[in-house]
Length: 97
Image 1 (cartoon, rainbow, N blue to C red):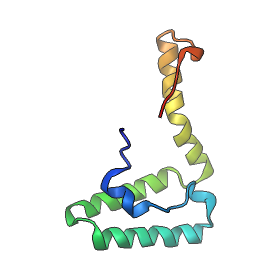
Image 2 (image 1 turned 30 degrees about the vertical axis):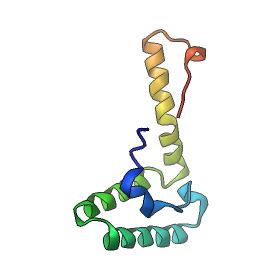
Image 3 (image 1 turned 180 degrees about the vertical axis):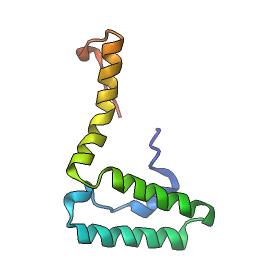
């Protein structure tokens, strides 16, 4: 379905609080360290570095309410810009998954 975050990575982050700010930062840091430890111990060695980098990238992109709003709004902004450029009325756009 195009869920790039799924696949072999998802098993390590299942249970991580969302939004990340739903828990105190200290608790989030412990959860992230546990996830990193799991990746280091269990992920195929050829994937470990990439998974750890991806985890850090994703967390950094949405670790504050402001960043999360930006991430959540990005697809809508893209569609809005496309619609304006192509003369499509907002009421004629349906967004799915």
